[in-house]
Image (cartoon, rainbow, N blue to C red):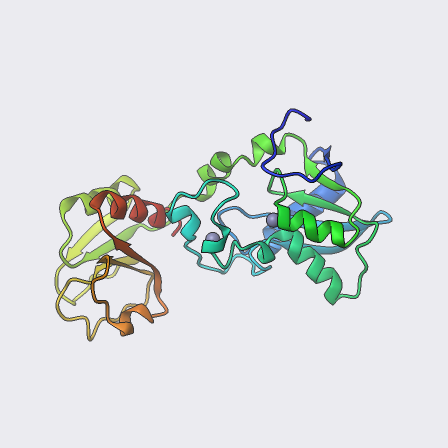
Length: 263
Ligand SMILES: [Zn+2]
Ligand SMILES: [Zn+2]
C-alpha cells in the first residue's frame, strides 16, 4: 500500500487498511448511507475507542440524501483535491472527518486516543488531518484498495448520471443544446414561449423577452451570456440550481453536460 501516491499525508502518518467485513468499516459504510449529504462523493466515518463506536458522521454536513446539490467543482472540472473554495457543501468544514469531530464534541465525547474508520474515500485532505491530529486521533483506517475502489472516476461513474427523463429548453437555443441533453438520455421539449410543457427540469435562456411571469417548480438551469442582464427575480428563484454565465459555446455546453449529470 506504500506505493499509493497521496495528494497529501502528514509526516510520520500512514493509513491502516481493513477489508469490507471489518465491523467498524461496516459501520462507516452505514454512516455513508445515512449521513452523507454529498450524493456525488459520499463518505462515511466512525469514531472508535476501546472497541466501541462512539460517533458517526458523513460529509456534506451530515445532511443526508435529501440535498439537491449541483457542485461547481464538477461543473468546472476541478481536479481532485482542488477548488473546494468554490463550493459550500464540499468545503472542508463539511468533510466527514471534520463532521465527526464536531459530532463527538456536541455529544461530549473526547476523541483523543480514538481511531477513525473512513468509507468512501482513499485519502484525507490537509484540513481534515489537521483537525484529527488536533483532536488526538490515533489511527485512520481505510478500506483495502480504497485508492482503486474510491478513485474519483470510479465513484463518479456510478453517481454522475442524470436521473432526469425530460428536460425543457426555453428560449433561443440552437440544436446542439438539445443534442447534449439527448446524449445523456433525456427527452427534450423546446419552447420559445412562457407556456412550458411538464418536464423534470428546465434550461432557461435569459435572452428571451418576457421573464416577468416565469415560474417553475422544478430545477431550473439559467443560461446567459457573460455580463448580460438577468432579472433578480430569476437569480433569487430558489429552484435555480445553477446559473451558467458563458463566453463561448464550448464552455456552456461542457458546463451544461456537467450540471445535467448531477441532477
Ligand atoms: Zn460541491
Ligand atoms: Zn477533508
